[in-house]
Image (cartoon, rainbow, N blue to C red; front, side, top):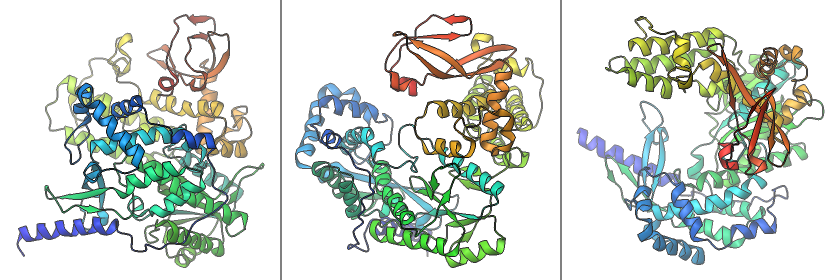
Length: 608
């Protein structure tokens, strides 16, 4: 077989794989109904279906990325913005036509599917991620619907889902899992954690199931017809070897690249949450009950990343797999059991292996990776940070051969090396040795262009890290970044009214989350204990998190002020998170000194 024939055959296999993924093999599925779905009010439902205004359409255009890859029509949003005065009215009329009919012309909802490899050496279709490059007209319609949906979706999505909802954070789940593992170990309880892998989740979602879920959530008929029109009119062709295949239509699934898709998926995934609530109510499944009348945890969701928590027993685990099978039959969302893993706490390795065999999944070991971050690990150990060290070394090895100026190295130190650890630093306090190692990498690269040779540093590194106002280059200290990111948890604990992660912390450590008893911080889980210790340590040095803010009307509100020492001088950085108080001028008081300059910004800007 010639190389050309092999290439053509590989392209045909890719195309057939995409088409197969979007063809429903079981057109007739059982209905999924429950009284436990959260419901929209009549007012919210009617607001979703209100007439679309010209300003909404214009706002949607400006919210779309200007330089994103175009779809089949070839128009970027930079072009549409530049010529909005000439074409804006025509685009608005196209959106109004969709509003009236609920249909989109076939050519306006076409897309190119590009297959992005998930691994370095992809061999099968499953090793690729299909990303849709969608036409501009449909994307504007989708964006208008998304902006409306964002306002009401928190009302119908349970606290266990932390994806795509305002004021919910990707690290809420890892924090909860960390603290629950720590508590289970100390209480010597038996439990299992089951991390499941959905197989092509976005591609396999059944449209009738999604429509049924929205109906049970009290979404109106017109809104559901709009969503059905968006899904059923979609067509696509696959980009293979630089050219496009024959266009095909969709029978199921939602497209990665469509602004609507993430929100439609979490509404569909709400069915799994409802199924788990029903199972626990009827004692089919037993979750983990936290002390002090705390929440009962059965699962945590981040879009299609789901981890289940249950009391240890074979029947409990088998019942869970039966629930997942029933959910699959209704929704089309299938669990790949061979890629799913079960973890045991308080039991022997043999017991874990026997349980894994009984549910046909793999055995996992604690600590493990969840949402891209290690959980259940003692992060005070240097060895647990090897992944971050390797990331630094990999990036630096790629730049070693490049002839970079001081300006180029400065930019890379700020934009790349300064952000590589942000995700880990947001949950864990890095050991002093790790901070020292990473800073030494940055210092050697900045002064010498390589980490192999330690060239002379003409200025103390602390001065280079300092901000421009203080005579530095503004690279920023990794230690200060770590402390500031951890300090956000204190602020969230004090300001969030009702969140699942906060309920878990209160159940385990009391109403004040342990901040009122810092001497007991060592008894807490490593993750939350370091956050409590951080507050206590900075307070001893006179750096209080809690300060008083007053607005023009004389009201006062407690807010977070992250503080740190830099070059022997106190630097105070204020996090404006005053979202619920509207636009106002603020006078900020720090002890006996005042910053009289008023700061005016919108709630959205303050939340940024």
